[in-house]
Length: 351
Image (cartoon, rainbow, N blue to C red; front, top):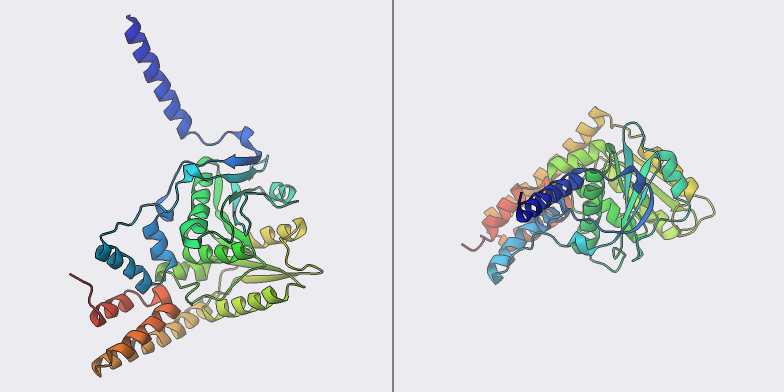
C-alpha cells in the first residue's frame, strides 16, 4: 500500500472516531464543578422566530416581519452564538436511576457561578446545575438571557441522562423574573420554576400569555415555587400579587415559602432543599375547577373581541385598534389568531 493510501485511510479512521466521540454523552468523570464550559449546539427553541412566537404578544410578534419587509432587513436565525459563551455546570457524582434532574439558573449577576452551599443539595437530589455568564440584569432579556437558558438546557439534556419530568428553571431577583417568563413561554421544556426573591403577575406587557396550547400546558403541568425572605418586603408584596394573578389565570400549582430572618438574598442550602423537594411534588389541578376557570376567561375574551367588532361596524377604527391592543396585551396568545386577523382588517399589511 502506498504512503498516500495509508495517510488517506488514517484520516478516514480519525474522522470516524471523531464522529463517534461527538455522538457520545458526556463521560462520567465530568461530574463535579466545571467552569468556563463552552457549548456548541443550538436549538430551534432558542431561535429569534420561536422566541418571538412564545415570548411576545401576537400583535407585537406580527409586527416584526412587517418591519423587516419595510426596511429590507432579515431576521437572524439565533440571537447568540453558543460557542462564544461560557457556562458553569455542576454534575452530581451519582446519577439517579431515572436520570438527573436539571436546574437551569438565570442569575442577576454577570459571572457564571454556583451559589454557596448548593453542591451538597444538588448531590442529594441528583440535580445538574447550569448557568450562563453575561446573563445578568444588565443584559437583554430576549436577546441574551432567555436564549442562553434555552441553549444551556438543550446542551445538557443532549449530553447527560436527564429525566424530562424534572427539568426546571430558576433564578434569583431579576433572574427569577426571567425564569418565570421562561416557564410561562416554554412549559414543554421546563416543568417547574424556582422563583427566588422575584416574581410578577402574568397577562400583561411584561409577561404576555403564550399560544393557547402552551398556556394550557402551563396551567395543567407547571409547578411554581416562590421563596422570599421575610425581610424582603417589596418582593414579598410582588410574590403575593404574582400568586393572585396565577389563580386568576387558572394556574393553581403555586407554593410560597417565606424564609425567616432573611432579607434580599439568594436561597441557602436548606431553602434549596425545600424547593427541589417541592418541585418534584407537582399537584395536578382539579379538572372541573380548571375547566370552569378557563370557560370564564373565554367568556371575557369573546365579549371583548365582540366589542371590537361593534366598534368596527360603527366606523370607529381608532377605538377598535386601541381596544384590540389592550386585548392583545391582556390575553396574548389566547386571543390569536382572531386578534391578528382583526388587526389585519383594521390595518392591512403591505402587499
